[in-house]
Length: 291
Ligand SMILES: [Zn+2]
Image 1 (cartoon, rainbow, N blue to C red):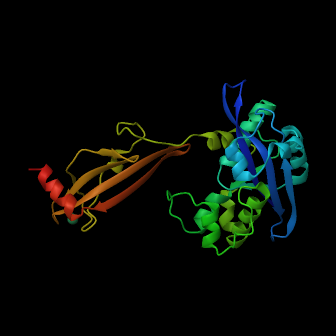
Image 2 (cartoon, rainbow, N blue to C red):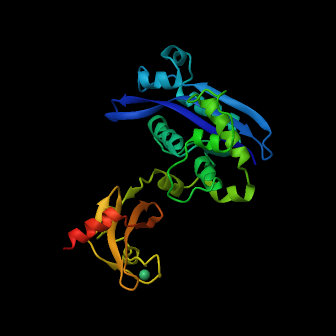
Image 3 (cartoon, helix red, strand yellow):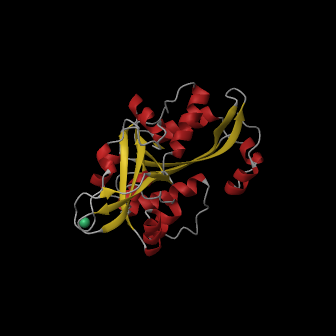
């Protein structure tokens, strides 16, 4: 099985057709390896913008790509067919889903269809690396630099935010964490409508406790000392996308906060629960509140 790590750079361009900004791809960078990490080649292409006329100063600073560089670039459709021929049969990987979402957006604009012609199998390399680095579900997304640091990879020789350099660094992280059977569940069949529906689904936090997808059981908490059901002592308060309330265990006289967060995903609701201890100051406040 061959793997391709694909990295894109893009520029926010105003589309008159859509009457909104579109992330227009200005650079493709990729590296291809076989199943034993033998390098099979790299792909680099600058894309001449067609939606936007000029790239923004921010993108210029970030990527050091200039308008003159892009003048000599390929048209998006040319770059796509060149990439498709180069890629062949492989698993495409990107760091997080934003590159793939941008690619879908550009395909929709230029082909009139969201289907990415060369995408047969896809894996989110960032999600895989997070799992292998032991990040718990729901932890903050691990940046490429953080992952490289954690794996003792020296990133100083790489030009960050240039597509091919980023893809090389991503490859090094992948290689250090590679485990064929652990990777398998991350590889998705990208030829189905479901793949596009899922990847384009906008996850959101549920901010209303009467939402029909909330399971009432997730609003109850057991005492973290004795394990028995605790009594809720306050209203639920929404704080940073989480609901928080005070709980009290009648048996141990133990007071704590229960915190729960509901994230609406394509496949359903992801629930994250936590028990927070009440510190002295909070205990005083709770006492005062209840007087
Ligand atoms: Zn208890």
